[in-house]
Amino acid sequence: MPGPGDGATGVANPIATTPPRRPGSVRRTSQIDIARDDEGGLVLAGAARDLRTNDTGGAVVALAEVRASLDYLHTLVSLQTSPAESGSAELVGTHVGTGFRAAVDAALPQHRERSTPLYLLLDELPVAALISGYALLYRGDLNRRRMDAGQVKADICSGWRSDGTMVVSLRTKGSMPVPYGPPANRLEPADDPISWHEIGPLPTGAMRRRRLVELIEGDPLDVYAMFRDTHVDSDGAETILHEYSVTATLDRETLELSRTVAEPHVLPWTECPAAAASASRLDGHSVGELRRLVGREFRGTSTCTHLNDLLRSLADLSALRLLLPPP
Image (tube, rainbow, N blue to C red; front, side, top):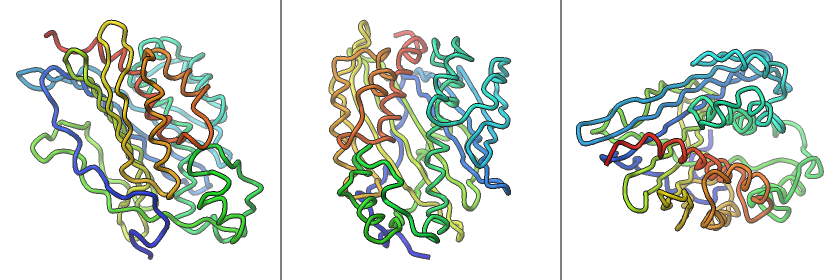
């Protein structure tokens, strides 16, 4: 099995640990685990938690869980949520891809309006289904047959540019290079066991997306966010595929962002890091605009599909602002 550095990689400098919690902060953590079933479908299971921290410690203020089964075409076959929501049954039979997020908005509008942890998890399902293809790449399934560059959409993001590593490899070799990233270190600080919600081990062949969004009291408010995608190979080694962090400041009255900076930590292709500059385009925008703004305007080779999802998640800051402990 090739090791870290044997495949193409854009950057490999993972976060050592996520920052320590500070009094006067609220932190949302989430994870979606991505496994393949015996019929070629997917099982997507995850959890999210909001944790408020003051001078006396941390208090959980919200929890959510999802478990979704998808067939091999990524149609939603079953969905269980906690808290239970009758509206979630309307999503069964929907394709978990383009259009799924609009279906979630229609089925559970109250969760969208309140930017709840459950809404975040459901919003994550399409991208979890999207990155599940990397597990097939690691397993060798995608490269057992010759692939045609004409079958993929080029120039949709920095990594998939028409003159970039992936598309050129498809065009010239009929296969994709395998991005072996660095080993996945522990993100939780050793002295803060509740910094993340409880997350179990990841099975062989599975993938995981972890996300953190934190708002910290101040004038203006400080913002920290990050995400990490990992995969466990046949030897049981967990390696990092994608990892970004974002820092920003947030006006406590207007909820407008400023000084938004994205830092790439682990990315698979040499072209990927160029997308980090797109984060500054959020400056001057209210967080309430972000899901629509990013979906409409953050396209093409100056952007990254996965960074876009992290930027969209900053919309949750409006809900986290209401959870900040009293000054």
